[in-house]
Image 1 (cartoon, rainbow, N blue to C red):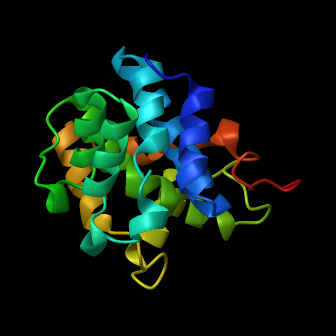
Image 2: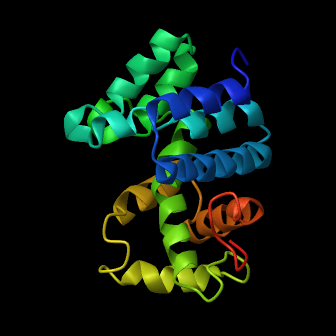
Length: 191
């Protein structure tokens, strides 16, 4: 890997001052690392892609303003390789036109929105924690369209489908991926 994790964190924080965006980046990084281990892939690469997938978010704030295409340009200018950039573009498939093909791309497409949804579910639980959070609790909130209204459930469902995995399995593994970092992202009873 050309860039260390510390360099990637610094790059992210140069372009995103809001701590909320960094916590989301950490969540997606953890999920990507988890799934890389599961699939026997490069955990460092997958994690770094997860960390930097929204590098342009504070600048663009929306797909209408160029997300994630602007992010791809920022990464290219910084010297990240094309495999890395392609994965970032593929997580915004509907807007970038880059269809997720590799398992890394498919996973990023699926877990980006899902990490936010699972975190939202944890935030309304006693202790604001992933501990004890079960798939059935997430699925119950899933049906409530007023809950986490900004999360596109259809994207997550499509992501699970293109990964070739059941949605419930994807949710279960995303919860497992986020448990170890809950304090870093501001969750847990002692947060």
